[in-house]
Length: 385
Image 1 (cartoon, rainbow, N blue to C red):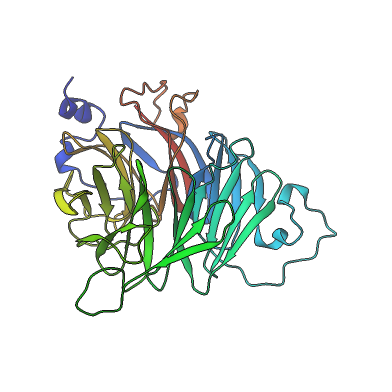
Image 2 (cartoon, rainbow, N blue to C red):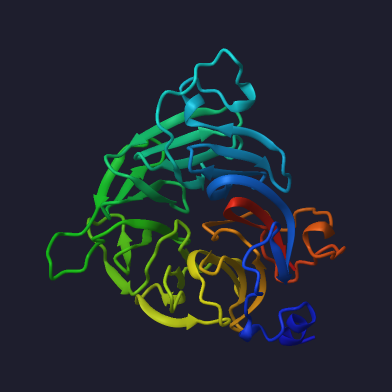
């Protein structure tokens, strides 16, 4: 069956002419096409999601500074890594009535990244709106290392060889840290010359390391430019635009690093593919007629990507080769803020109650990983089939 015919059979109609139903949101997310919901969790104030490096745990950061921890595919909360209990080095599951309440102000978790340095112990890197970056021992609720920046920390990226990580913030600077010592190595930033475009001039949210080159990182933010940096240099080496980046997962490299996907929070040209070597636009994808302002996007395979945003509140599964939407999750009360990639080929059970009565075991013909989607009051796990 052809892609268009299959999409019509599952209810999308012509995927290039996809339109939202009249009801903008409902009590339950509405999957359609080549997506199958595995799990839906209530998560008030959720801002971001990340799987641990071993893909066995899913973590959810929120506006109150908490990080909820779940077993992949399960909805029962295992523990919560909170600022309140970080002082005692204890998670919620170890809490008791004798613990003193946290006297500080709640600070939002702005970004979560899996920490591959210690795969035997689930470890998580988390940034906060007050400029803190904490390395958490997930199961014991212990903070193993802390970085304090004199700015809001809005995003992070970890190098593919785990040698370093960068933080992004309200001043547009890209701060590079050594992964073993957590010491600042250098600050990469605009040179200050008005006639030179060699860094950001506004808030920066999203960063992505080249998967095969640990010295190359791409960043984006509110100044409508994507900057490519060599971490051995103080200023960027090239740039491209325009892309209005407002999410922590708005940029993502393809597996070979040749292309960079950008997701823009704006009314037009939201989903674009760039040549990373030359910093030139390859194409603007318009897989359907919905103009969702995008916060997040991830490559799933050579031919598949996913993205999500607000206005309309929608998660999309896009076939790159066919340039069409092949799956959606609609009916969301809030926008899609964050997307994380989980295990490939994980065992699942059919869940017809979440999938409009579909009592089937999804067949992952696209060879895509499980996807976690964060939409404020709800966090969803889904399979592509």
